Length: 258
Image (tube, rainbow, N blue to C red; front, top):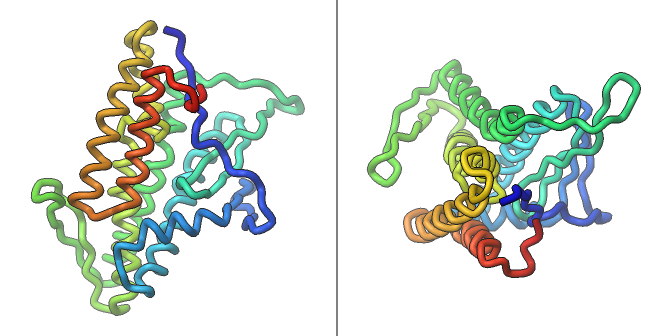
């Protein structure tokens, strides 16, 4: 079966309300509906100040995640732009260069996997930096358990009050927990793209179909866990859509472009 790349969740149209800026020479565009996504993500807090803190942490974290992709692309000679929108973030290749010529650069699977992993990797580094600064400023770190099984770091700060503690923990939570979730084998997340390549490499004719089944099942499980154990409507909504789209792709239904 010939490998095809999913293109759903395409970049949003440009609007007059977009926020545009550059970081390290990389263009960044923030679509206005991105802030709605942040609000939905943080709404379980039910505290206006905490919601605003979470939105700031989400903005910083997703931006760093996408810059991780963009910087590794640039290392391979591929220019890109970062777009933050209602479904999270995209890093979109713009052009490539070699000397004074524009050329097509084809990355091998190892390089593509590195680009895919770079987003979560940048987030893990950011979480580590936040924890290191907290320790240097007199804080302490201990672990708790997610779902009674998975160890997760918690930072205790002797200064800064509740607002700073909320911001620090939101940065750690987003960049570690959501970094791991992003690496799950669900399309079109980074982990889904990595899984697709691995399945296709192992089975050129049926690997894509197998990766879609994995995406459907894992996406559905994460949606249920998000709703029942984490009370996250955003997580349930997002992964519910991804699971359904992967299933429709398996069934060959229209509306899921490749």
